[in-house]
Amino acid sequence: MRKRSAVLAVLTTAVTLAVPAAASAAVGAPPAGIPSGASALPARGTTTFSFRGMNLRMPSAWKVRRYGDTARVITGPCTDPEYFYADCKSFWLVGPKTLAYWGYTGKDRYVPTLTQPSCPFGGMSLTVLGDKATSRGLRQVGRGHAAAYTAWPGYCEAQGSSGRKVHFTQREWFLPTSKILVVDLWDHKGLSGVLKNATWS
Image 1 (spheres, rainbow, N blue to C red):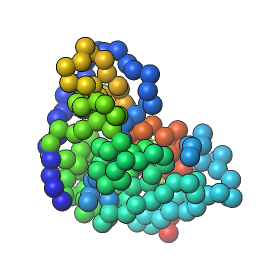
Image 2 (tube, rainbow, N blue to C red):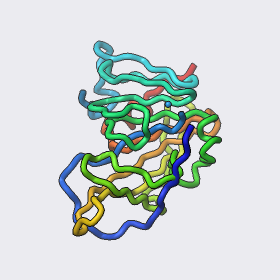
Image 3 (tube, rainbow, N blue to C red):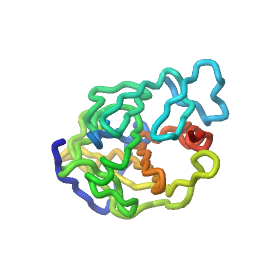
Image 4 (cartoon, one colour):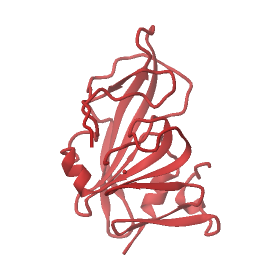
């Protein structure tokens, strides 16, 4: 796996563009439509995806690509399913080998690159990742399992632009005992419900 370096910076106030509320999802390891909540998912038209003992019931239109001990769940248009910061509507599930490779502990944002991340929004060339979480807490991921939830801010802008930015939030659900990290840069409205209603085997 090729390492690239990340740029972490504090966000500055800027004009927000009217675009989808998030960014892309990830190669971290070298891995339509979204319902309003898991309870809205009928049994028909859904599929169950299993990852390290965690079973997620999700729309059958979502497609899974596996890369080692990571997986990318593609929920919409995708230009490059392997690169973490590609223009690819999706979310990631990351296992222990990849987490250890990138030194992830849950304290800081998951950034699987050693270079400045590209922006998943077409036409934007610079990504700035905020270093202060906007939200932390515990979230249920199936019966008897709780994840450390963190929301990290970020934005993209074209180099040489006049301050016009596209803001997004990187949401993370980390289960340290199960050694699973779920990462969403696209603000999937139904993902929290899908995780809350997970089953374990």
